[in-house]
Amino acid sequence: MYRAIAAVFMLAGALPAQNTDLSGVWVATGGVGRVDRGDPLASNLASRDASLLNFERDNALMRRADPNKPLYKPEFWAKVQEFDQNGNNADPSYGCMPGGVPRMGAPAKIVQTPTEVVFLYVSPPAQGWGDQYRVIPTDGRAHTPLQELDGTWKGESIGRWEGDALVVDTIGFNDTSWLDIRGYFHSENMHVVERLRREGNTLTWSATVEDPDVLIRPWTMNSRVMRLDPDPKATIAESLPCVEHDLSHLVTKEHH
Amino acid sequence: MTSRLWSSMALCALAVSAFAQEGTVAAKAGGGHPDLSGVWNGAVNARVYNSGDKVGLILAAREGTLVNFERDNTLMRRADPNKPVYKPQFWEKVQTLDQNGNNEDPSYSCMPLGVPRMGPPMKIVQTATELILLYAGPQDTYRIVPTDGRPHTTLQDLDGTWKGESLGHWEGETMVIDTIGFNDTSWLDIGGYFHGENMHVVERLHREGNTLSWQAMVEDPDVLVKPWTMNARTLRLNPNPQAVLEETLPCSERDLSHLVTKEHH
Image (cartoon, rainbow over all chains, first blue to last red; front, side, top):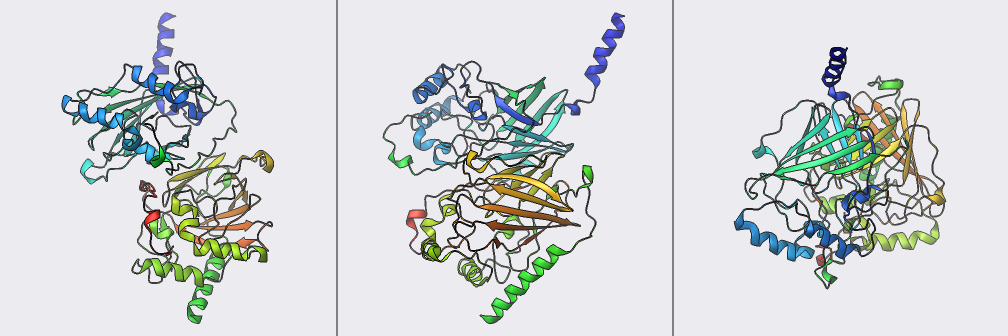
């Protein structure tokens, strides 16, 4: 009897993992330290009391208090600090540039076919990543050699299934994007591994950043948990376009 | 001038007749409908820049090259007889917007093109219930087009947006995408072609073998005398099943205030 149950569990573990279906609209859960507005934008916004009250300072404080930071080599500490302190002008997303991978975070909607997974994003209007998408082949192809890739914001992403998790491996970045707010720059040799794992109607996204040129060791970003929108006809709202007309008129260095 | 006019009219007619041909067997998706999935980045129009890359879909050029592109493109567009016909009270407005296109054209300051100016998609992902239209250049963006038979949201319940609310349905072998719910900021096309929030756009996608025809019809009784059918575009399927879309460079508007001419293409 016990053996039979064990066999059933082993069999379940051996089922083709490709059957995990990530398709759907995934709404960020408010969770601890996240804005809970029931819309996909919340996945980008940190907040002490789950509201947008006093958001600008609140967000900056929370991020600084977060102990999970990338560890830069000592020769880059001054550079990170300078970028951070002048974030209004140094942060590329403040000038409407794309967020790039991994800063763009988790997708708001996923469309999965047998050979590829499409990530669809929405973004707040103050940031340039807009209605962006990523097409992630899962057909077993190999990466293009790094030296043949033009460095881009999103890089070249290849997906594969590890058990029931989708693992997205990305190389081929420019060195303009930031990993996250706070001046976290990176090099063109950055390598990002994202994991998306569905359990029931929740989806967990996490990303690990390897960049031996500038980081002492790989950095695993805080994971994000999203829940499936139960409405099969759910839509995602169009992102307002980013406008940088105001950038030169800012009088403080407040930056969230 | 006359010969240019005639040749562009002939091209227009060619495009329309290609669009009207029926019967070629295309790949079928589940449900018996044509399968529009794939990367459609080959331009076969005669008078666009034929570089074999995504930019070729967007740029009109007399010689199929980018030599003297800026003036060339402007001339070709002005010579095109297929223009939206505005009500007389808007003629002056269109002309002013056109002549000051550098500052008036929203896409010159990095705003989205919107529907229908964004044209046909570069890649289509088709599922049983929706089409995902992916655009790569001049702006990377997407559209989600439900094909599950749902009705439109009431127009007054929609926030006007650049892309509007698009719904798709099959008419025979043709995918018909019906869109309402626009802002009044986007343009239909270069040339100062503004529109109202009541605009209604109907796009038709028709696959024949490995070519895809796209055509859009614009209804806007607030400003147009009659519906405007835009020039059709024909796209070629990328034969490489592993073809990828190149990432488009982000738009940066820092140069806008430094332009010294009104050249606008």
